[in-house]
Length: 238
Image 1: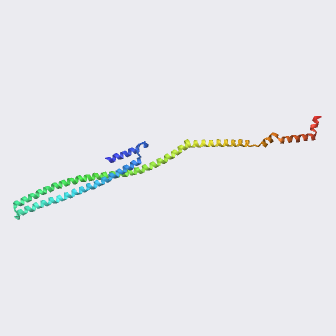
Image 2 (image 1 turned 90 degrees about the vertical axis):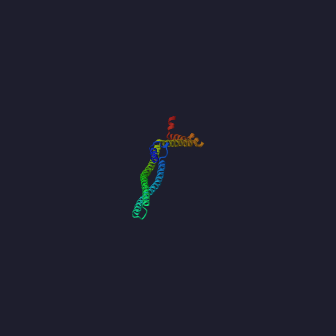
Image 3 (image 1 turned 90 degrees about the horizontal axis):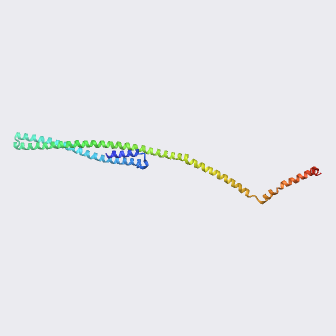
């Protein structure tokens, strides 16, 4: 059946590991379910039509059975009338014979209608089995679709998480450390640059004061005066 070929295609698609090279398994499954539902509608319509034919065949069978019985009764009645002299005996025989012929024709119609009803009932049974199979397949694949969608959600979430973890472990952490090292080196270089700038901004007075070293000169003068008071310089000179 085309149904099972489609179901095999769906199962084969879902089992295929190279998902990026095939149709989306969810969309494929959804399409398969839509196809199954269309097949179900067609089988339901066919079932109704065949059941109608079976009912008509059964009605025809009952109708011809009644006609068969009626022709049989008419043949008996006509023969009795001929025996009682109520009608010509030869004519009674002729009419009774015709009634029996009609009875035989009705019997053939009964047998034909019975055979048709039997075939139609077999078709009804087959269609009902098909319908039950399709319904079970639809239910099964709808459940499979729910499971598949849940698996896809979990798979996508896991993939995103694993990707993030991989990026953190492999590139993000290293990149972050490199940026931190670069930042520290830049800050150190900036501090050194500010130091150089601070040294370069001294005034000429600062340089002169440093060169003259007036504090040291005053200290020498004070020392000399103290030695004079103590007579140290005099003693050495004498």
